[in-house]
Image (cartoon, rainbow, N blue to C red):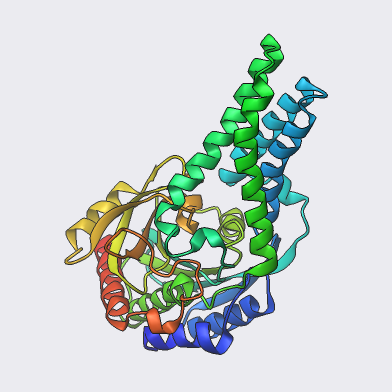
Amino acid sequence: MNPLDTVRILSEEIGPRPSASANERHAADWVAQQLRGLGFAVECEPFRAVASFSYAYGIFFGLFVVAAAVYPVSTLAAVLLCFAALVLFALEASSVEVLTRILPKGTSQNVVGVLRRRGAVKRKLVLTAHLDSARSAILWHPRIVPHFRTIFLLIATAMLAEFALYAVGLVTGASWVWGVSLVPAALLALTVLIFVDRETRYMHTRGANDNASGVALMLATAAKLAHEPLAETEVWAVGTGCEESGAFGILRFLERHPFDKTATLFLNFDNIGAGRVSYVTGEGLLFTLKADEQLVEIASAVAEDAAPIVYKTLPTDNTTTLTKGYRGMSLMAFDSRGVLPNWHWRTDTIENVDSHTLTRAVDFAVRIARQIDES
């Protein structure tokens, strides 16, 4: 199937695909059907996960607001609240579920296809792309989104600043601490309001670029590798659920399939339907996780017009893959500013997906896969 047709079916016929929703399940069933038609052995693996990251992160930031309110009454309680929020935030951001384990959940699923080989298998190549689409928010307004990482770093600084101020107040008893702390506390209160606004006023996007384009690339690459199989590499194609709510699909997949970390390579497709096709050499919002060195070398060797880039905004499935110690790399596409086009915004529709970008990306991915097999 032409990749643009895949984008049309997912974004227009199925439409918005919230995490752990009926439409996400519909997309999973459709992708499973396509993979079976290509000769893959396919399983749909259900799991439970939260449907939005707003709840957990709203609680984290809300704890700082509560700490500001209780500081005049109990300095120690304020310090402990800030410390607990920082620890929870750091753990969840590192793919360690704590608060999200006890929050209400819905049912999602991963679509897992394997192109079985009869001969010797020296390595596995796992193609990944998430099925769900995101809920929009003011933070993804086209004028704001280029500054997304700066805003996030400002929020992170506010959390650390409030904790540090209250620690100083606990040790020294300085009277000025509470007044100064109201500045970072106000910023964090505004962040909580943004999450509330996101959940009550904004809708889910059709997700043509994010991430129907990634699914289209995964299927098109899988089709070419099924038609002309690799010699010594077993190909997996995985459509993950609940990426937009916290990359829970890839977490559940890695838990269920503990691959040999030396002989398994992950190639992730995300937001690759418009702009310049790029291979991501490092990704991570706070700390940069380097992509697998061999994959980067191969991508560089067969790149043609594709470009290297370091991606420093929200995590992808591959961020989790790298966090868990696996070898992986993302393929994405960016505009001239290095920004994902129409990211998490209502303009993420099929009209803003470029068929030429999809074609170039498929060719690039297949070249990488064949070079992996020959290496």
